[in-house]
Image (cartoon, rainbow, N blue to C red; front, top):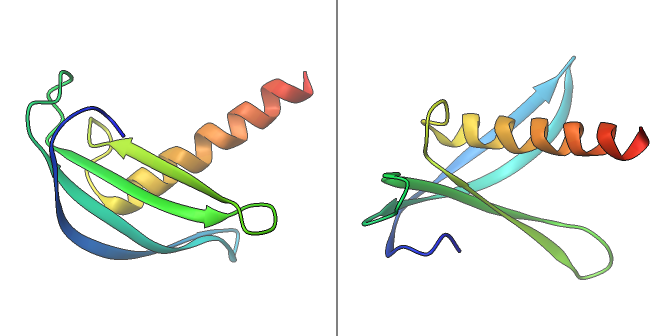
Amino acid sequence: MHGAPARFVEAVEVKETHEGCTVWEGAVKVFALTGHPSGATRAYAWSYPTEGKKRRFIAILGLSPVDDAATAVRTAILAQVREADRAKN
C-alpha cells in the first residue's frame, strides 16, 4: 500500500477506549519495511467493516510519533475525527 517491500512481523491486539467506551478493538498487523522513501522501517495496518460487506483498510507508516500499533490506531482515529469536523464546517 505504501510502495515499499514489506514483511509481516506480527499481529498486535489493540483496544482503544475513550471515556470508558471502546472506540476500536482488533488486530493490527505490523510490517517491516525496506527502502521506503520516508525512511520508515515499520507500517501498521488493519481493517474494519463499513457498509454491508465492505471494509475500510487503514495503513499507517511508523514515523514519529507513531512507534507502535496502539499509537497508529490513535493517530488514525484522530485523523478521522478531524476530517469529520472539517466536513461539518
